[in-house]
Length: 226
Image (cartoon, rainbow, N blue to C red; front, side, top):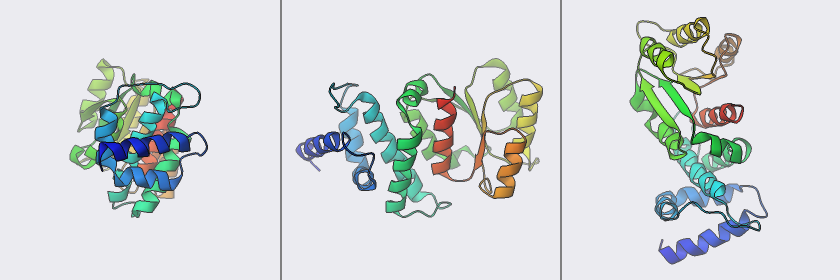
């Protein structure tokens, strides 16, 4: 895809956005040419056209949609086709990634607790592209140390960390005992099972899931409430 092609497609997108809300086919095109779009958008400065044109926030929404769809398409837990991944990304962005959330993202810091952090590289990159700062720790002890010294807006945690198979709940309990009242989202195997999700919510978690698309949606919703 040449720069001229990108300019033409960019113009078409800007007109589409004024009359429709994130059609899946548009997101699919963005996913198909993700890298080309990223290079193109990165070359642009933050901008805002008046009179219904494409704003800076829309630019970030497009980038996020492409990134989310790309992650979802290769997430073996979700088993989405590219088309389904595009549709899921469209829904997340249109419903949860509001202008307010985008603005809030650049001021947000997340503590991510996982003893296998390499499993979440793609997800973290989506958040970091929005300006969110992420701190990585691998244990409950490290997490509580960071939480006692730094301000965080949100915690994302796995569940089992040897030797504690319920380490996520241990962290949540210690946060409550220390009066650290910030949202915690469980992102762990089995996190979408109804019984596990019910227990997590009953214990005070903001949400629980094992799917990347759900994770993005929950994080954006949590930020919108801050």
